Length: 165
Image 1 (cartoon, one colour):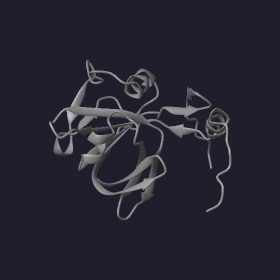
Image 2 (cartoon, rainbow, N blue to C red):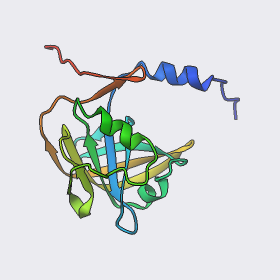
Image 3 (cartoon, rainbow, N blue to C red):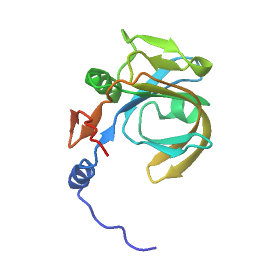
């Protein structure tokens, strides 16, 4: 086994921040039916046929066990203007959903109102890699509001401006 390169974690994170991403809140229900949610930017479309996506969760995340045991989850793709929701679900809280309008999706999973899109997924598979789990979801149904998505890069929120191809 070769030696791992030494990276300053802060500098490495700063370098990764130069890759703009969208922002999503993953939601699910824990084994007691309580709503859980967390902000991610580690979301990727893997396959169109079948429709498979993935997202990553650190095993040190407070809600890790709830997501590790969930058979269904939703990807709430945030719209521009939902920065406060991104910040809310990125931090620990007794009730992240307090005052957040939601409707029930597949298997009761919370769908946050006002999002650019929702992907309702069943668990496809999970892989342990380093200090994270990669969770693959099979998209069972989706909605797309067509709103401008929220973007994140270099430690800040921004806009997505599409240019003609």
